[in-house]
Length: 190
Ligand SMILES: [Cu+2]
Image (cartoon, rainbow, N blue to C red):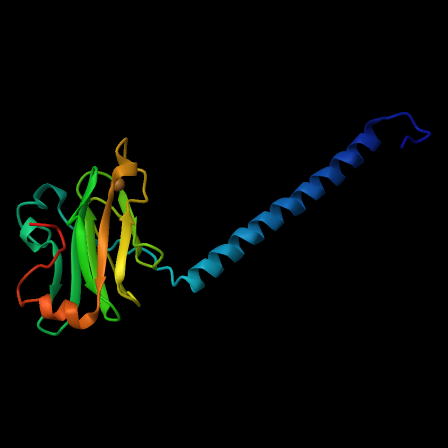
């Protein structure tokens, strides 16, 4: 459509304003959709924000303290609490195969030795980043027994896509039968 007036400042200005307003609404709609998605996934999958308050010395991680090799894996405390300790490094997790009981709260404690890694266990809400010098921790319950894949989900270098571990969720009685006080369980073949 053309008007009687020749195309001048006021007309093109009005067109520009209208176009900007349309795009502003598009951007607002996209932001509203993203916020709605965040709220939905947060509630629906019980997303847990990573904890970054506990620190650990990367330089002595392998030598002493909680994350020495002999302490990695799943332990059952005297109080019956199940804890999984793991570390991530380019390009593997240790242990490579984690055993946990079904239907029992499991606390994960993990950190990274070199760069930022992360993991998610199958389609569960066990999902965290692992950051050098920080201990990531969360507690979750695996509803049913079965094997899950646990890939690294933070791009950590050229071997990233080959970085994953397995999680064996065992029926609680089978898990407890295997657990011995003071021992660290894993399903890594020995
Ligand atoms: Cu990684």
